[in-house]
Length: 393
Ligand code: SAH
Ligand code: SF4
Image (tube, rainbow, N blue to C red; front, side, top):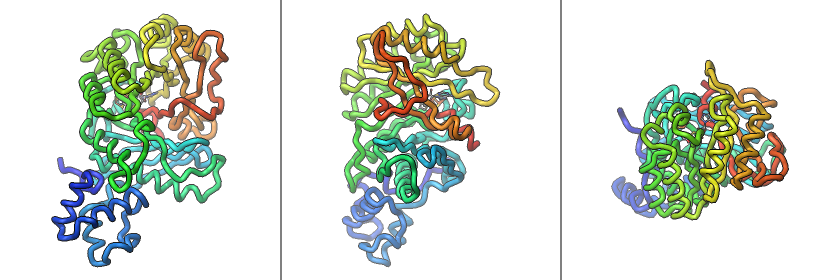
């Protein structure tokens, strides 16, 4: 299988300087190119007026090849949510979603084309793994988001204009920890200050995993302050073996133990993702079990109403059942939020994409969760990967 072309974002600053020197240019040209890409989001030679005209196109061809070609773009929520479908150099397709909120802009990125983990409720999982994305292919999704944001800011939206992506969630296609090396390098590129990278805060980055235990341990040792999200979906091995097949390798207890180690090392609260599926994992006893497993740990639960894939036998839980599930978790003193699939009423296609977490009760007697209510300070923003692959497929 051929590899994506080498790109500046695949390399650290020292390697970029070396690459530029090998092309017969002075090393500081690498910093100039990096500032154009990470600071101004441009890879067009004509924008690079500080570089000698003769050198520009060769440097751009060698170090800033176009990695993503726009295949399709969908907007909803009056432009506040945009989903982008990209074609990669070899024809593989991946998606990203840009979501504007009053207080931040979140970008959901893909880490792989497809996914090999086979979770039966997830559209990405059904198709299997095509390949890992390169570091630069991941970073390029965010750069594209920055560009879109700038152009979209000229159009009026109900949400105040933000000029920069502030948060990144690895919740698009793929299992980020199965593409470990490239994902960690992408996190470093996204968080290193310009000219090394984009300068986004590590704390504003969420890596979501199906529960690859050794990789969670390795992530904890990286010295990064990123948020870990664990897609649990069931508190017991019987249900999780079916919903998340990798559970046959690493059981619930091992996954949670790795999560608590991560919380201890980083001091970061772990987000436990749980897609509520009618009559499959939404029983009251499972809520109680989940609550008791998480109580007194540095965790919060993010419940996701299932977004059914075409032909699936499964559907989302009934509202009353979901309410009770929330109550029972909260009764254990565990913070719990329900993800609201924003835009569902506005546009069926986009309604399956973007989401925001709505603060729910954090203890007995607290106010009921208001699904769909606007909030100024959601705890997290997440997008179901499988769901995102539906409307554009
Ligand atoms: N592979 C990683 C990250 C991408 S999936 C992971 O599984 O964590 C991002 C989140 O969307 C996960 O929590 C995943 O379980 C959830 N998800 C996938 N398909 C979904 C669907 N059809 N409905 C609701 N959530 C879904
Ligand atoms: Fe892969 Fe995550 Fe989908 Fe499971 S839920 S198949 S790990 S993308």
